[in-house]
Length: 352
Ligand code: Q9C
Ligand code: ZN
Image (spheres, rainbow, N blue to C red):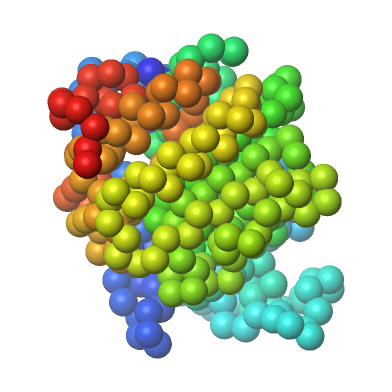
């Protein structure tokens, strides 16, 4: 398989995020990506491919022009106003307020273009997210068309919470959505996005909700108790032409591995029957037992099994990094997935 690295991720160095009313240490640290890359780079599991620049146009296929415009200039505006360090939103256009008029005020626009106060907008957020998307497009480009093949893209910050016109959940540009749309634009008729991050991929779901050319399947912590709280329920099946092309498999916090693997099988069956030309996997590793902010319990046998089952679909498959915050464990978990995918798993037999 091919391995692609976003070597500009280090431009984004969040310091703090709000949690229970306090500023606490930011969770999406550069060290995550350093550990992930160190684990796979020289592991022999794949060949490193350099990222190329495909420009802004593929991002503009899934994000709004005004949002991309805002993201590019936001931190400079913040500094010009006398802000220091990273910027946070403080006010949002919730129900009964208008989202169709862009305020001139910076704080007004921060709220219009965001979903939470847990995602610091740093000086380098745009550069890191832009190059994450370029790395993802490079990974897509490296896939052999129409046959079993794989590429893994190490993006950071992650992407699946970012919507058409908002950031949040540590995400600014929705790399998986950019890749899915680019695959269609390059000739695929149908693309499936399978999201196995602990959190529901609200941005990806919303971007493709009314379309049948992108199937979105997600297994995740139940939004009744888990972030992002306001999307990801089982009754969200798509709308209009997209009805039937969205599948959510919410699992209670603390769900054990057998039930998680059973949900994965249900999601894979849905992907199989859709028969996509390309599969994009939002590969969060925050489902691990070690993750500091999540409550599933996956370990090496399960991560290898994820890789094996993905490979068994025998599709051109783009694995895109999402969450995974156990800095000391994520590298090993990633390697388990990729070894499983390549048939190099060490664990004998399927996990219970
Ligand atoms: N005060 C991903 O795994 N935490 N994102 C909420 C808000 C959000 C995780 C904090 C966790 C988002 C890609
Ligand atoms: Zn997550």
